[in-house]
Length: 121
Image (cartoon, rainbow, N blue to C red; front, side, top):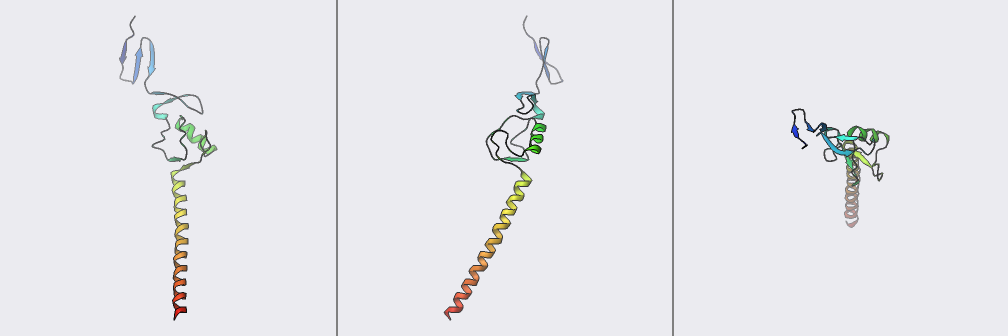
């Protein structure tokens, strides 16, 4: 018997009598070991998190969020994973820190120049 393949309107394929769901990614979640559907897949490119490593294990989005609540790091190499809001707040703090010391440095240079000019006269 030749296998017949036809498409239904409900996004499923029928191959003989076995029904195969075409919404699957054929990937297994690293945490729960269940199959990942297309809409449940954690997308590294469109994420609210900044990964500091190149490890990209397959996750359900819900499994990844649960993992981030327990431990905010990569499960493979333990590198830090920042939320974008946390990362940008840290960047803003660093910029303010640098601006504060830059202003102090400029003020110190101005004072030194003024003292040097007054000593010359």
